[in-house]
Length: 339
Image 1 (cartoon, one colour):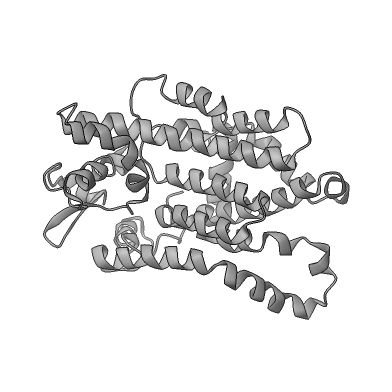
Image 2 (cartoon, rainbow, N blue to C red; image 1 turned 135 degrees about the vertical axis):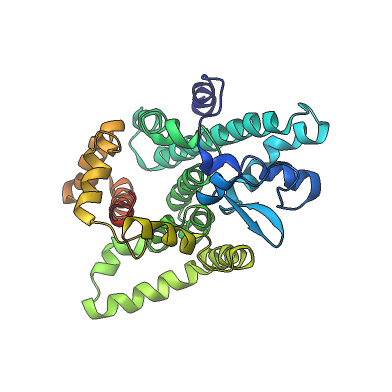
């Protein structure tokens, strides 16, 4: 019911809403289904403006999307029938229509996965349903991730899948699934160690050990659980090296762009300015566009209290991991020059 409701809401505007960041990604599934290759030569032309914005990339004599193909690969089932049938015949129409449907499915499915996770750890009642609805309708999951084939779309899907796996006591698999989203959106790489150490960081057994022994125990626990995630990340890095000549993909090119802003690299921004801007700026602020997140701040603080941990141990542990992950990602983005 939740999946169907959100899918209906996300598509109620009857159009795809995104930007140049998604322009090339819309065509990648068509190229893959037609030729089994990532080249976009037959579908798009070299655009000087887009080239300056690094949305398209010319390498090995062909045109490619400058973003990792995670979202296009996940979108392949949605594209398959219209591409193979050749209906509609206009590739632009197929790209816009199928990319919107694929993105909305990823966003709606992420909410369904989150609901499944919360059902396992929250008290019986409507709290899981309400929380999943708030996530699906009160955040940029609706306004961004569901509206076009952004890198956000696979990121939210894999993160919610990872949360469900944590509640199923599968932290290693959670880290691996999260790594798929991290290839699409690298800032989420910082979440992987938190996911992998889920049942260690806040357990009584861990805190009873001597302080000097905990880092060694943490490494022994986390490193094996991160092997799958490491394999996924290495595969993404090798793809970047093959296409862009850099393990970081187009990161170096973006650094070159930022020199116009008198900066040496893309994390040369002001942390206080970025933090205030990302939370309270009228044109960018998280709490302006998604004011319901105020309750998440409150819940994140409550999760660290002993009374909450005693009443809802599993929910508190997950909320503690989530609050730490949120804080780290927020600080990373706050230091980003063009937050």
